[in-house]
Length: 185
Image (cartoon, rainbow, N blue to C red; front, side, top):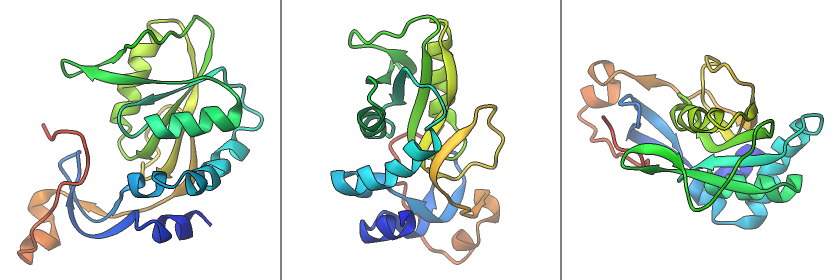
């Protein structure tokens, strides 16, 4: 069901992509294409809600940009508040009067988890408030299982990536596009 929703939304892209990690890939998941349809987002994220049924969650927090709509929808389905972190002067921060409190059970939300960079930045911000991180929830999990937190995904995707020097698409002279929102460092 999830893969069909991604395809119907034209969220599963094929081509040559420069990822925010600096690596290249021949496939990219543009969850914004799925999230523009609230009914599809609700269906896809209900898979995550089912996986969370025995996990207590007090609040969901999504890093901007990719985690905001996911946080909202998961918060709606779980019946808990949904807030977000955002970068201020290049550093992730909790702003806009949002609050978390010591002991709260926090679920981090993302659209796609690959390296977990945004989630981990958000976790560092929140840990200073004494919260308990219960896991990371996402639509598409592309990670290699190296994160120390459990991941609750709608779908696990294995998408091959390459170092730019080894990229077969570059060797064929195929130009890449950079679809994500995070700047490459």
